[in-house]
Amino acid sequence: MAESDKPLLIKRYASRRLYNTETSDYVTLEDIAGFIRAGREVQIIDLKSGDDLTRQYLLQIIAEHESKGDNVLPLAVLTDLVRSYTTEVQSVVPQFLAASFDMLRTGQTKMMENLTQMPNPMAGMPGFDAVRKQQEAFLKTMMGLQTWPTPAPKEDAPAESGNAEELAQIRKQLADLQKKLSKL
Image 1 (cartoon, rainbow, N blue to C red):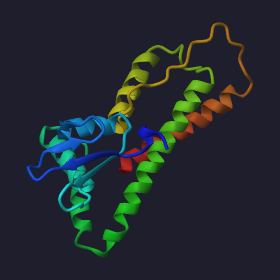
Image 2 (tube, helix red, strand yellow):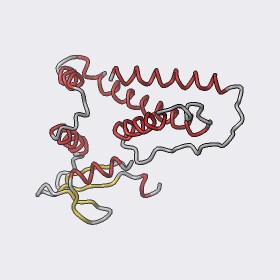
Image 3 (cartoon, rainbow, N blue to C red):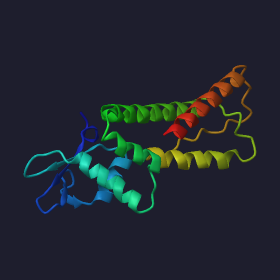
Image 4 (cartoon, helix red, strand yellow):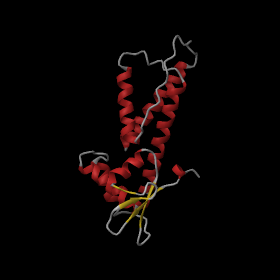
């Protein structure tokens, strides 16, 4: 297993300082959030007890972002999460959230593949670049992406007979993703 495939081990000392075992230095919550945004899995362990504190620290990172005005989770979602802790629905919520994010990641991956594998007939439309940049910013925010693959423009590409069908399929996928996002 490659080094980057293993979770980054962070040890919490009794002084509550967090120690990165790979780089042998102390890190902050913002550093840990940066590791996660870069695609790295982390595991935070209490040095004395051996308890896994990862969930606690991830929730703390989210709470700090929320307190700074970075409203990641809508108020209705937070309210429903609190309600789920006091009902029988509690056992369903984690699986639902995990499945929803998996579906979002899968849809985002398919959309990126579709955009990079076929010539985009919409690229010549006025305002297309502005819309693409807005989508890129949205996806970076939602998924913590670092880059968005931009298909290279093809000069005088011959029109394919399946372009209209592929475009209709992409529009349907995009509409489905928008519906799923609005439900979240």
